[in-house]
Length: 234
Image (tube, rainbow, N blue to C red):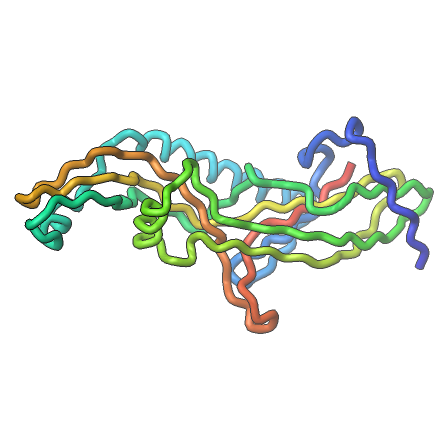
């Protein structure tokens, strides 16, 4: 089969990953792969974007409120011979499988079929996913966070492969990716426990953190991160 040579498109022609239209998406989630095309794909992406936007607004409404509630338990476990200062993460809420469309990025070249007939082209792609947080956390704060959300929260994952796509004459095709992640949000508190066991919150910072959502694949012998792969055409 004849493969036409790749053409790298001028940046003025395609300005971002949202140019053009969606041809197809591949949803990798919890060990299951689902393909949607055309309007079904567009509807799915719009629905998930709306869900994510609603979650963002809900978290904005929760910020700057005092949710610290561990004073009794802290005073019970701390010896009263000395004053203690330490960090504790108070999780206000969490959400699984959040679609991070704001992290969407191109993962292949732009390829244009400059012939007059349909052509096949094999794209090599590489995607990655790592934990994110809205603020920089110090070492002690990271330790407090992981005590609540688990030690795997800060891991990073990557994936790569190739796919062959049929491209109609005169059209440009490329692939994008965004991760599906687990979300935890709450207050990072710096507290003081005095000699009487009284707990005082000295500093509170709002933390909004995401970690790759993944499932172990025994065939690949690897953890596979969830995400949405999109084929776009212009």
